[in-house]
Image 1 (cartoon, rainbow, N blue to C red):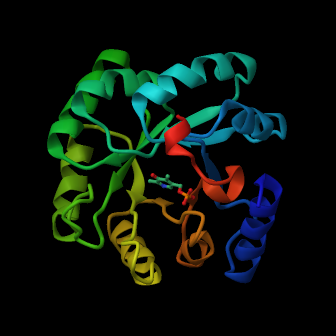
Image 2: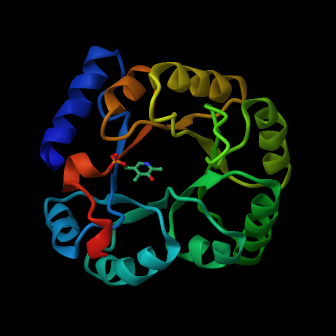
Length: 219
Ligand SMILES: *Cc1c(COP(=O)(O)O)cnc(C)c1O
């Protein structure tokens, strides 16, 4: 485990599956991790991180950004509409656009600021009732709706069901992105990022395999 081990495995997967070297971005998911673990990875030179909670990110990243100005932080957790304004100021990308009300809010903020984070639309490929994301059959219309609002839709994101083979979900997401002309594919976590790279992931989101297990109780 650790950053370098994961970087090596990503490079090996790129080679194995015919992906261009460096074509897969590693988002180091730092949610809930103790500061010293995140700082160690920053000192190792890594600059792309993922967070799930707006308030937590707001508390941690301003100081780290001051120390490491070229850092980028992506929002990968569900985003409440009433936190959207804070989120667009905090994050370079949001991977969890999943409903028209949030799209409208982000479009209004983008117009007011003259800029928007890159956006990924989350798709509920497993149709799980407890999980966020647009249903597959609603995706094409939602992509069109977001584009009509001038939102910078960069790609799609999914979290496959925990108890299923993720590969068919990754393949399905890749097909949806291709048919909508979207280049970005945010998929793959600690347990399945190599399968995601095989299916075309451009962004893998890896937390515990880099930082160690999360301790929610100690937060
Ligand atoms: C927490 C989280 C991850 C990282 O999970 P690990 O299993 O620790 O790699 C990736 N994506 C999302 C959306 C997450 O919430």
